[in-house]
Amino acid sequence: MNRTPVPVTVARGDGIGPEIMAATLRVLEAAQARLAIEEIEIGEAVYKRGNAGGIEQSSLDSLRRTGVFFKAPITTPQGGGVKSLNVTVRKTLGLYANVRPCPAYAPFVATRHPGMDVVIIRENEEDLYAGIEHRQTDEVYQCLKLITRPGCERIARYAFEYARAYGRKKVTAFTKDNIMKMTDGLFRKVATEVAAEYPDIAFEHWIVDIGTAKLADAPEQFDVILLPNLYGDIISDVAAEIAGSVGLAGSANIGMNCAMFEAIHGSAPDIAGKGIANPSGLLLAAVQMLVHVGQGDVATTIHNAWLRTIEDGVHTADIFDANVSKQKAGTDEFASAVIARLGQSPNVLKPVAYAASPSIEVKVLTRARQKKEQVGIDVFLDEPNVTPEQLGKSLEQLAGPDFRLDMLSNRGQKVYPGGAPETLCVDAFRCRFISTSGAVSTEQVIALVTRLAKAGHPFVKSEGLFTFDGEDGFTKGQGQ
Ligand code: NAD
Image (tube, rainbow, N blue to C red):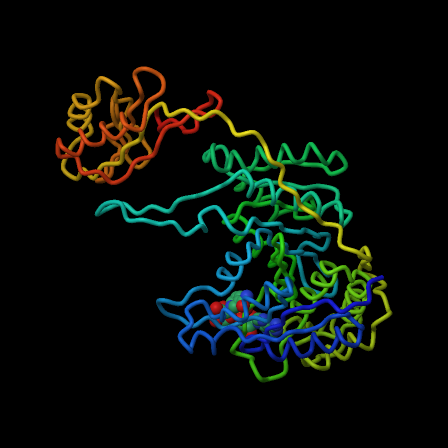
């Protein structure tokens, strides 16, 4: 066993942060966690000094140096110009995987789903969270959903490696690939490809709406759930809530070179300074961190002592229930109760046993690039005062000889040729031009856009229509 202390960057945060961090560090020390702590300041004080991200460059340098960030919650000031610290850290350090275990602790913590033991693995960097938004016209706003093959591959591999390392049996992916055939379709396709490399782990896919309904109704049917960013954001809170563990849950944000561990709750300013906050979420995040840095032995000792404390009815006010709790403990008392039980295991709840060294390694395979050809272009025009019929006829005159007008769509719905009179048309039209001779050159595309502009059609943007190894890299218009 490696006894060299592992460098870790620690931030005590705002509100209840300093109280729960002090309690947690006391438990880590008593359990002889082998950590060399570097402290940094983040959050409210840093924002107030005018730093929009809530974290100084020197602190980011510390994170890069240690590669491990143990973070208490912070208070995010309200108002414009302030950027989410979590998003800043995630994006700067490439923390692509969010891992949130959501187990039930019945009968000691109230839940309707006593058999639930779900781990949510959420892609953390892509999807609608790329933050690429534009106002295209007077009436239309747009947010780009970006899903990449390497991004899908990393998160899918992480989910299967996690399942293997933690003795889990099944990975379930949720997507909406019946509607978003290209983006969510890629997420599902890559997850299915990766699943084939892990025959020891079962794999299934649910459309996100029915999957979420099933999760809320019968969460014990699920094991590891693999999700794109937006669905993961929503469903990870649903899962923690129905497990009864929203105040008890920790989460890990994992990158190739760096990882961040924190409780899922916020800085709880309403109870700050009162010594009554529950340190469990942060302590369980510390358990995830210890496993990550190869101290599964210490993680096992702490987690089992914590389970025993919960089982013995030593509860902080937030989970105190006169029917099951035996002692109402403050933050420090609770930490002392955990310390007193180091070396003990739970009797009713299932004890944990973590492997001594970390075993999750994710490699993204390189693959041959596919042959890409441009076969057309979608041109987006700002046209407030025309009918689809008028616009279609005008554009048909301007299309040739290199292109033909394939269709116009408005809010994704085909409106020309042959649109339905009921379709509401706003001022942004997508005009699809397809090459008359197979592939088109950039020069031909530019010449088309120039013709449209000269004829008085206000240009907003364009998207190339490409094929990859002969397969269309674009969807048809709805109704086409
Ligand atoms: P919150 O999670 O801080 O509090 C919600 C409720 O839960 C409050 O009643 C609080 O007292 C209670 N609670 C939370 N943690 C508790 C604990 N450990 N023990 C006992 N009770 C606990 O959410 P909020 O009030 O919406 O947000 C407060 C601040 O935290 C905001 O500034 C928000 O931006 C920030 N926040 C930070 C993070 C983070 O740093 N990761 C996450 C969420 C919210």
